Image (tube, rainbow, N blue to C red; front, side):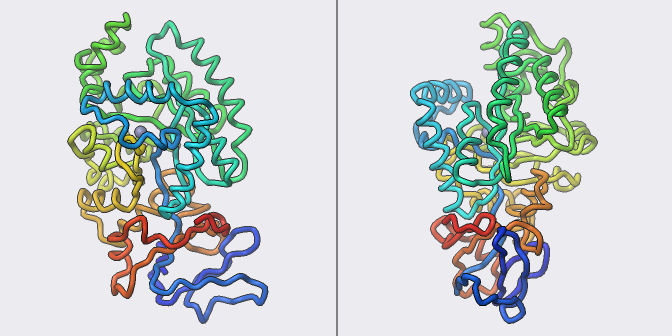
Length: 397
Ligand SMILES: [Zn+2]
């Protein structure tokens, strides 16, 4: 057993109560076995906290392999075209399949971004846990007030699903799809509602070029639509978001590839968290995020898969192997990033991320054979090695 916030326990056991909370963790002989308790044994497996996937787009489940463009803007346009072929029911079914696939891969908490509202509805219906960020876009400041009116109505409607362990958040999408005033309005709305913010930031190189000198593929596309240059002077994506009040302790920055030391200082000052998606970064942008610098600076860093249109299947442990390569983490530190580190990045670490009394019974069992170093064996495992998953004490895989 790898409790993560305590040393590994040989022949460990965990007792979960009827409410789904952990009441005891320890060596098997020391953990009570109430007569009426269901009992399951997993010889040759590691028991660890359910994994935390800090960046998904589960409404895109089913589109794996369907958009292969090398050019990021062409790829996004292809996804928009694919999404236009789906009904609301299709999206709900896709999101539900995505949640079940997460459980099958040992993931019990997800942080999702999307604009259909299907993921929060599916999380609510299936009893999944995590945060669903609802996306906002405006290409031109002339659209901002109408977009905001519609967005806040959608948020009110979707908030009906935010019960129990399902939370709603907002996601002003990216610097190439969101104006400064919309960033400001959505961030103000998030603070007044007390909900978290998730953003894609400093991801493609052309996003930096857009804000630096209004060049690159996004600048070309925006100029063609009559959008004037947004910043009169050169500014980085991180500084741009900070200027509009987006960054704070409840802000999760996905990707954050193109940042420098000054950006990192802003991120530290604001206390943001990072969702690190190493394989997606390589797939689209052929480069790595400076994740070692973020760790060194003390930022909260979680691991994310991004959508299966970027890298399929969603394999959080494969992402963690890449993150380990970039950070120099030990095996134990890498397992921590997959679980408690992700929970900290999402602000959910008092509820999940480790096996300790009082937290939810989010647990996964991963086959490791008779390995002497269970963390290494977990990190070497494949999705098919996940033998069981519980969410809040409920068997979900
Ligand atoms: Zn993403």
